[in-house]
Amino acid sequence: MVMKEFIKSFPTHISHAIKISNSVDMCIEPSNINNILIIGQGGSAIGGVIANNILKEKITIPILVNQDYKIPSFVGDKTLVIASSYSGDTEETLSALIEAYKKTRYIFCICSGGKMLNFAEKNSIKYVLLPSGAAPRAMLAYSVVQILLLISKTCNIFKSIVHSLLDTHQYLIDQQDSIIAIATETVMQISNKMPFIYAFPEFEGVAIRFKQQLNENSKRHACYNLIPEMNHNEIVPWVKQNMCAIPIFINGKTSDRNSIRMKIGIDAIKNSVEDTIELIAPTDISYVKQYFYLIHLVDWISIIVAEKDLVDPNDISLIDAFKEQLKQI
Image 1: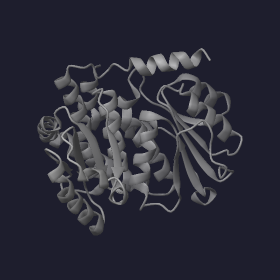
Image 2: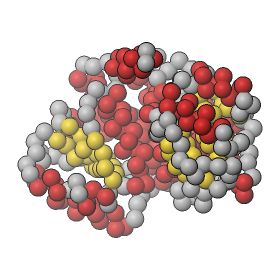
Image 3: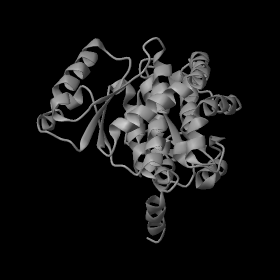
């Protein structure tokens, strides 16, 4: 299946992922968990960032996303470790998983096979198998849903999260034509400029996803920052005229002060660039729906940019070559 078809199927991936999760027996007494560590890289790690954003105000257990070979020293017998690697062969994630196994018995693996599956089976670690045969970024909904529902089971908010996800699944199906139209218009505004993506902390996963999709699908450079942090540093260079960059603001539910900061920031920047873009989530829907709406929107933008630039969104030959070199060392 080509990447465009995977993106089109994103809403149905959500409902399918819920069905997969329902078959997983994983329930931990919340009092046994002091913190949660999610380990992964790239398209697998972003599921942890999104889950952290969505659950931040719903649970009291801190979550950290770990993207390295090593794990933090705080990991202990009351840490829930979620290892996510779509291929099951991501070497950084496997290294962190092996280290975590020495420190806690609360481990859960998310993969489609590979060395991670072998390690989980050998050491009686619970796991969930994702559908195989795709690029990790194409299966985002599966990893996000598994992480969300695993944590929500542990924190006794499972039913409410499932309800939100099912509502979101249908909402995205209903809105897909509108989302594609907005994405097409946005691509025309981006043109050949380099995107500088700005989002609120509540939508950091959207900003990262947008950057990664532009990198991999569109073969474009992009960078991101968060508001209010960018107001304290990155806003300064925009005093200079810059016709080669395009500021893109991702706008959804946040604090009143952050909303004001974004408005002032757009006004401050707009005279230094040819155009600014604001991707606004519908205001009459829930935060979870806004989040996945924006994810789906930036995914479509990346694939339409690829089509416009006549590049293959499925090609990640540099990543493949890099991994092959690592295997030789």
